[in-house]
Image 1 (cartoon, rainbow, N blue to C red):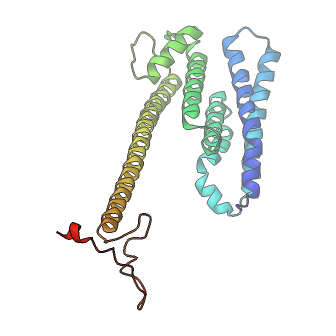
Image 2: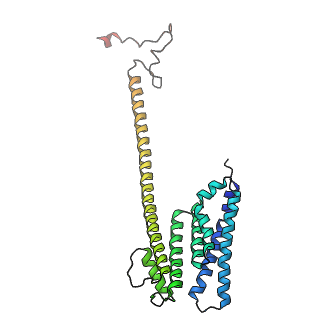
Image 3: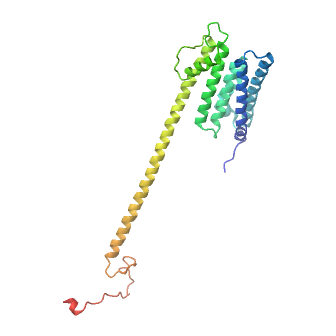
Length: 274
C-alpha cells in the first residue's frame, strides 16, 4: 500500500480552495478596470483582496516547503513557484501580482491528478484571454496615443494576439502594453502547441487501442486454428488404429501392458473369404 506523504495530503486538500481564491483574485482585479468610476473604497478593497490572495498563495508555498522531506530539492524543482511568490515584492504593481497568481495557479493545476490536460488548457486559454484583456486595458486606456479604450477592444485585441493573427486595428502603444503583448503572443503559441500535441496524442492512443484489439483477435484466431489442427491430428491417429473403439484413446492398443491378450477381430466366414 502506497503511503501518502504530508505534502501530498496538503496539496490535495488545498487544491480546490486555492483555485477558488484565484477566482476571487480575478474578480478583484477586474472590478477597478471594468468599473473605472468606482469609489475609492471599492478600489482599496479590491487591492486588499489581491494582496490577501497572494499572501495565501505565499503561505501555501511555505507550508509545502516545511512539509517537504527534501527541502533543497523542493526549492530546486519548484523554482517557478518561488519566483511567483517573490515577484510582487520587487515592485508593488498590480500586474506583477497578476502574473504571480497565474503562475501559482498554473503550477498547482498541472500537479493535480484529477484535472485532465484538456481542462487545464481550456482554463489557461480563458484565463489568459481575460487577464490579458484587463491588463492591456488598464495600461492603454489612459494613453494619449492608445487605441484600446473599451473592454470589447481589449478582448478583441487579446484574441487576435493569442491566435497570432494580429489584424493591426488595435495595438498597444505603451512599453508595458507591448510587454503584455509579447507575453500573450508567446503564451498563445505555447497553448496552440499543447492543443495540437493533445489532439495528436488522442488520435495515436485511439489507433494504438484499435491495433491492440486487432492483435488480440488475431491471436485468438491463431489459437483456435492451432486447436483445430490438433484435433484433426488426434482424429487421424485414432482412425489409423485397427479395431479402435469409438471414444477410446488413440494408441491405447499399442500401449497395452505386456502379457495382456488383445482381442483379435473375428475371422471372416468361408464364403466371405472366397
